[in-house]
Image 1 (cartoon, rainbow, N blue to C red):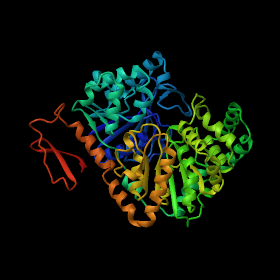
Image 2 (image 1 turned 90 degrees about the vertical axis):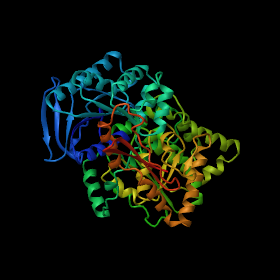
Image 3 (image 1 turned 45 degrees about the vertical axis):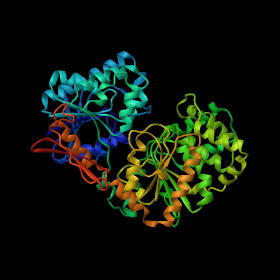
Image 4 (image 1 turned 30 degrees about the horizontal axis):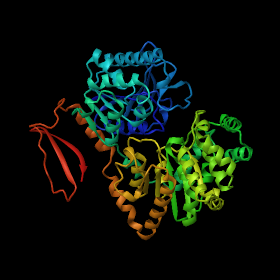
Length: 564
């Protein structure tokens, strides 16, 4: 088939970006694929064949021919305004969150995308369109289908639902209108279906047979690929040579300037001045020196994700004093970038110096330090309140002072070309998110390499972890919960060295190969077939893993998910 995959954003960093590239890679094995995106660094994408750019008159020109085989990247013209779900800064764009768009800006954004799509479809035969995110691709594709007749399948992710549609009724109404004319709407977890039914005023479509749940996956070929330490170092050296990224020295300097301050605006000003001198999304310039930790250490804990409040890294940091008390032979690696990193670095150093005044200021004003909005780090507030109430704060800070900064390392941004090499060097992965997540992709990536996952017990995260001892409830005791779960699982790992095999086996249920196959099968599915007389259920002994097959016609089978 000729497939167009529409992803209105960039292709690095977040879960939906990684999902897109992996699904496109699988589609490409048997199909021709065009990927629409506002990505600026196409050169760094492995499977791209060529890159086309569209001007304001919808004229296409070849920007670069990379290789004969690969997908075609297309950058449609949308002006310089890039709407996003979570605010960040991107070179060459005026960035606004969708809920901050004026009606005129939203109308223009939709119109430019519709015109670009129609122009492209008039010149290129496309069999089906796959589009990402409820805001606002379903409505854009509905307008495109009205003019071209090309069917579309919507793939929903948690960010647009929780950050935008729940806050702005415009997107609720427009996206639902787009659902009705779609071939299918796909989400990654039962949580997203339930959350959609909570948010949307109209709910009928979420029980329609066209609404599908297809869990995401892992690129096992990529993650199982081996790389020597020397090969890894050479890749990092090349990237560092072009980097203006952060360094440990910068954050050490921040702490020395800020450690005695109490004025949050002065603290924010000093943080911003330091950040203005670097590019926080670049690879850390001193990464290689930070990777030279003691390889003999027994316990190696890993976090991977954005460094923003909602991802909960502050929960992990506050749990460390009690983790190091029981497991002193431990290192912690934090992989990722984000606007909250400078505050996290200050919090860590404040803990290690038992700096009560600074800790209090950072916790009370976390929201302001991330994006100049009101709001504290509420779960940390609960934790500190409990310590004070029980008279244990001084004892806790005494433990915190024993932590060695060399054993808690912020590694910064890593791409998926080098990330698997880092994952393999750890034995436990932590996902302390305090905001709903559509799917726990990071957990599965870690599990695929034998890491034990410790995960917040909510939303789509809990749907992929079937072991109670690896889940931590999101409540006032979440810091203590992560500390206990991490310590308990490190103890189990010492007692049962082959424990990791259980998690490797569990991860095998999820692969992008199977995700892509099911998405492709949707193109040929009869609309609204549901469960009826032409559906056959084959029952297999439920004490084993059962395979469910659905018969669409006497000669056609769709293989569903394996489940117990």
